[in-house]
Image (cartoon, rainbow, N blue to C red):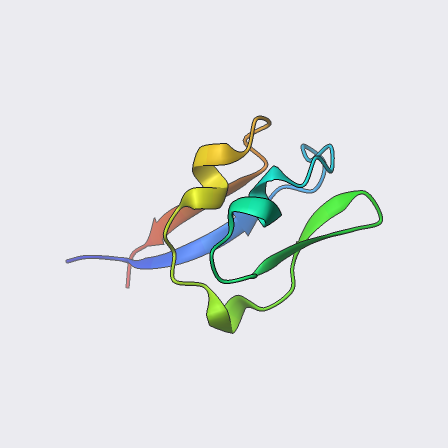
Length: 66
């Protein structure tokens, strides 16, 4: 059974570089007060670009089991 994808943000690991937000094709992420935040989860297509680009591993996708 394939799990549901979920976007996870670890704010303590984020240094606010903005790379994840810049590479997000749907504008899901933004930098606020020096940290990444999910601004529009409903637009996320779980492409993984944020996860691939984050140098601090502060944002990633996981598969949740149903």
